[in-house]
Length: 115
Length: 120
Image 1 (cartoon, rainbow over the protein chains, first blue to last red):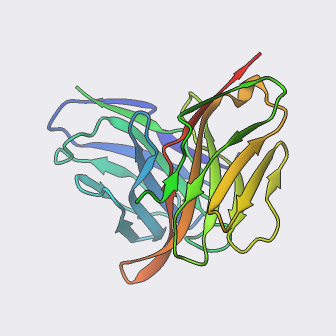
Image 2 (image 1 turned 120 degrees about the horizontal axis):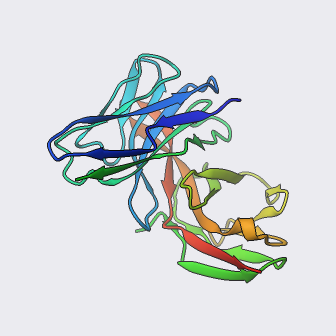
């Protein structure tokens, strides 16, 4: 089945630690995205990537880093510099950025809690 | 100013009845897209329906239809024949063209969401 997988589903981190959230897609999509969702809120864009080896900051990139070495994979690292990292993180992909309907399809999410 | 406004924090509907979820947007971009997503308690965002700014007809997908009123800048979601499984958070989102890093991309901005509860 084609889709987007995120792991782990739940993640607990101690303050001062870096953690990496996994996102993999087998939809053959060029574009991938990372969003953050806080309780009762909409989604905010952290980073996006239009193509392999290229990525751009979104609205709230501070304290986060990404890589895009493979088309299928777009891992997100939450660094110790992120002041309030406890949130729900959603990865998405689309065929390409901004063309046609350019619908973004989402993974199941990772819930990160900082202890 | 809010790009996407969903004024209904919560809505209740009886099973089998229709319900309208409101969404207004603000943009000066002539080319934009409007999306609705459903987020059940599991957290995954499920794409429901899309409307392009140049589309002449309202979009429909099964029990979902989008009441697109361009002059009023509204894109309300209508769910017909509500089912218990429709209980979830619903998000309206708008895609606009944004320049960044020397290229342009379609940036998606989300509203705050509306919690829909379907009663038996």
